[in-house]
Image 1: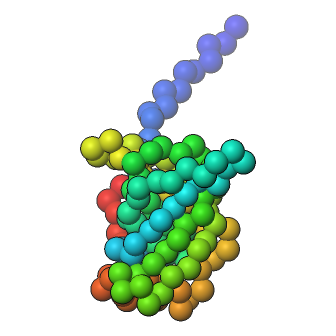
Image 2: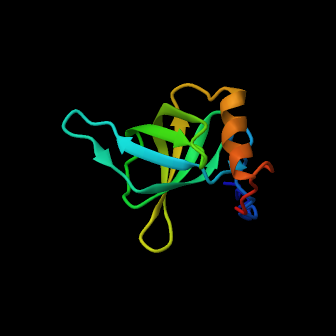
Length: 133
């Protein structure tokens, strides 16, 4: 019987997670009025926008919503010159500070470029958001 050599494998050094976002995120301070879409009764949330892109939005909310939950998000610039309602689905949930939750949401339809521009320009946040991972 021949001895089978045992090869020791070192675990690779963990690397930063790969960026999976399909569109750049922009910091945004637009007013937002999300409500969970429910068959029973709408649930109104208190939330602020963390960032926004053509395909989705990051919301800092007072309540955790499970991934898969649908929202109706009313986006409005501080001057109220632009407003639109967009449906979104919670894709991930991250605990935040002070009993808040970061809801990573995907829009049911991408924002139009002019919609995103209106939100970003109205708040003076024209640079893409970069988050440390």
